[in-house]
Image (tube, rainbow, N blue to C red; front, side):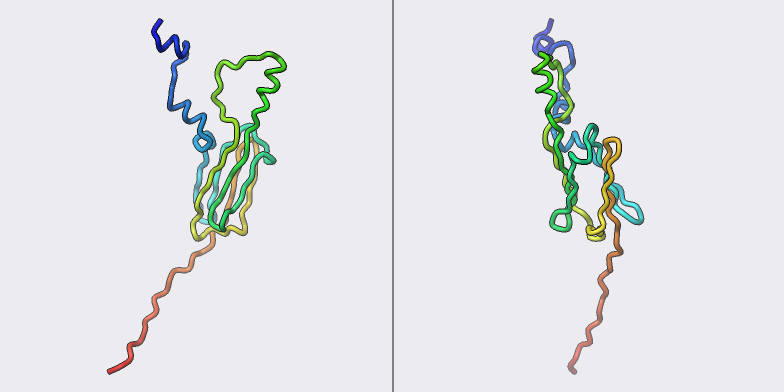
Length: 140
């Protein structure tokens, strides 16, 4: 048996997968799409309820999605003398922040959560383009 097998067991160790599962950003995947009418954020939050998640607009220009995955499995396991052999799912606090474009109507944000998927919809407004004003030059 090789030294690596002795140290890591029979399972192949993947440091990249381990990093993803321990990083709250990488373990909370979020997609952002822009339609003709709105910006839509789709965030996978399996196992969470809407009460576990907070959606905020910070400084009028940053969408913040945060929450916490509880770690109450350990308490149940201690009582039953259960032993974990491998843990990959992230537990603890997470936070995702997205700087919104100028055309986001931050006063009309809607959020919906169903089956562990959070959908945040932010309507768009038309941004006025700067007009060029010609200035008359006075003098001779």
